[in-house]
Image (cartoon, rainbow, N blue to C red; front, side, top):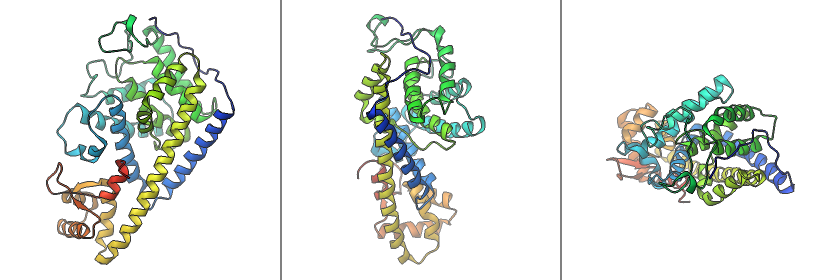
Amino acid sequence: MEPIKVKELPIEYKVDKELLKLLSEANEKYGEYKTYLKNIDFDSKYFLDSIILSESLKSTQIEGTQISQDDMYYIKYMPNNDEKSEIQNLKEVIEYSENYIKTNKKIDLVFVNNIHKILLDSVRGQNKEPGKIRNIQNWIGPRGCTIKEAIYVPPIPEDVPILLDNLFKYMNDEFIDPIFINMAISHSQFETIHAYRDGNGRLGRALIPIQLAMLTDDKPILFLSEVIELYKPSYHKYLNESRKGNMSGFIKFFLQCVIEQCNNYIAKINRIKEIYNKDMQKIKTLNSNAVYRIMPSLIHQIVFTKKEIEEESGVSRNTVSTLIDELVKLGILEIDDNYAKLAYRYSEIYNVFVGKE
């Protein structure tokens, strides 16, 4: 198989009623999700921290990690290994990106090289020149296959710098195409270029929320790895078709992913609000002001020890210990010693985030 010849952006794509309808619905759902997030009953950062943790896990699951969704909140207690580091690295990328985009207002090669280096720090691919675009020909196919047996061969390495420069100019232009269409085309183009020796999938998925945050002057709040992992065969099908000229098919698939993920987030927020309001009524029986100081930490941590709540909330050790024991009696918390001794779990909230509701 020969290396693909990649067209520079912008490119033509077919606009029909279905695409326009999906684009309108994606814009509407994203706006609705932002409104729900803004009006949540507690600091939205706590919701987003769990969403980012879930995104980090889902993105690594696409690459084959064996850590399950149920284990999401126990990662902090697990021994250090490649899978744990991959998840932590993705979280670090989002934090780094938020600060970089605020300051520089653009996505460029320096930035993308830096987040690639973070992603591959101390994990699979660390020996494949993290933070440097490839200078060799790579290909995709069954393990050990030759280039002739490959299912996809990216462009020659000499073309990569030119294609990336063109891609970043397109990604940074909020007027060249509607934002969600720009994001779909940008993601397809990035994965098609396959600019690095390893980590292209993880990096490409991380760039989706980062680009949206940059184009809307917001923070990263929409992550698509969960829905991409759910529809992985369709994702690869439409991505491959986009490389053959059917970009509108991939755009439609991408817009459907945006709509479904926004609906998923809205449902989670609504359910968490129900749980939170119910539990806030329950804790009135404790006649304690301090319980209102630890509740945000419980929602933030989900799975925790008493010491962790003491450190985050600033409430004294004895008071935290007494209140957590009382919250267990009220049925709000459960004792959970799966990984850490004397740990606790905010089970109803936990179930929402790990998909058990």
